[in-house]
Length: 53
Image (cartoon, rainbow, N blue to C red; front, side):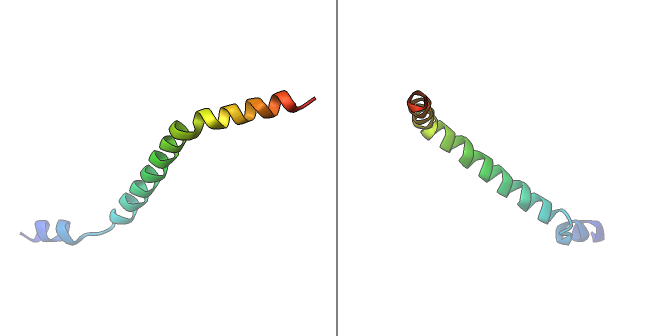
């Protein structure tokens, strides 16, 4: 019983899990942004490249 109680209340790995979830959320947002705006950004750079001498 003491082992189960200790495992339930132990919080040493909690911070690392929260950081992993935050990093995962940021990565997901970046992938979605690239998917949504990737073509527009690519076209913008192509237009910029053609305008340069």
